[in-house]
Image (cartoon, rainbow, N blue to C red; front, side, top):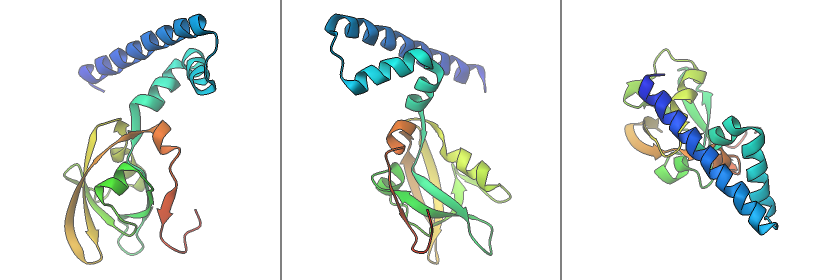
Length: 160
């Protein structure tokens, strides 16, 4: 990670810590927090790194598998209401490029990692769909907290 990225992460963590302090003071004044607000404060205080990570990093809402025959990543599931669904990806799309880089010779894990990153960041994806090549999409990442609530539309016959 370069110096600018480290500095950005440090600033984000500091901002979250300051927000947490503000929330704790607000809680002390109100003495009647909502359960989700109180849980957020408790989470921020007990594990601030995890709290920050779940809010400032995320993904796009895809389940990928390796396509039989070609070994390329294929979309097995698209999160309902996810950024991937909003961009127009479909179950069965075969990933050809991510961020303008061919994914040839990359493991499935490496490809998955290219879809993950800072919330709000974009991912450029080129897919092959049922014989049509070079369909391009731009997908904005959502936080892990948002994606954890997502259900997935999947190809019939899959078991997850």
